[in-house]
Length: 396
Ligand code: LLP
Image (cartoon, rainbow, N blue to C red; front, side):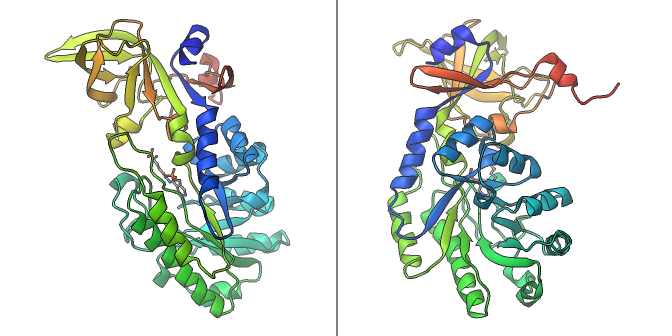
């Protein structure tokens, strides 16, 4: 299909394979989870309306972290009762918007949020359901830049910092959810289980004291790694998970982001130039860190393929760089590829999560086109920014 798409559309563009997203949803639905549960898509992984709507049609809710994401979730057709708001530093507007939309839960990460939630709910004559994201002090053994549950991290609240009696007294705020998310790309199932246990135990304790915790939000973090790495052992995860929830009556919410969309996404780029610099052969692409920043930011290199590759071709070592004015604007160092010439197309694979969503217009580059395909059909789901779009909102 990608070969068809490049005939019709200019690079760089992201394209997503609908079939792969469907497979991911089916996989999650096939897990033998012996308790009440729902999957809420972590929109930050890919906030395109078409992708959110696709997942909505498959029965998923949404977890959002800003009023922008909340607006997009609602625009995509997700019901407020299937949306949760997280966020380590929510703006007042995020909180007020979530209150008036009556979403399932506003999960607080700062005790201070309670005053605004309670006062504004009172002003509007509402009672708002909230959750608390707990920082359980667990090291998930993942990249430090995507680790969120250790003591000293900015996410969640440590239990000893919470005065639950004060929360119980609030008239326009009801604590119904406990939430935990210790990071992304977690391969050690025991870390997940340990984090889940921390909020199960706390919920049990609180409910004995008269609270009515109904929802436990276990966060996201299921890994999507390259073929060489060992992923999460879902069988062991499942076994322990069913065990720790046996005879419990909670509704469990999972918040997968990357797992649902990463593998479905491809970034297609054209080779502008090949340059010899010292001993290095450098491929310069028509995409850059503005379109895909994860290599620059985390040092994680995506899988790359030459579009028209012939497998038997001799391989050469190339550095693959983008076109913006930053020395760190590299996708891959020392990639082994067949001989590359100008106007070849390179395809980065598994970039459907945190690819487009973290893109920017740095160097005033238009944000790229996005295409969704399903078997032989395809449609544009985001047009490329125009030059005028780059000036939109600016006042001379
Ligand atoms: N729930 C919460 C509260 C989160 O903070 C996140 C991600 C998720 C769910 C979804 O996590 P996932 O299943 O996608 O791992 N930009 C980074 C990832 C940052 C993730 C932030 N939080 C990257 O490109 O790897």
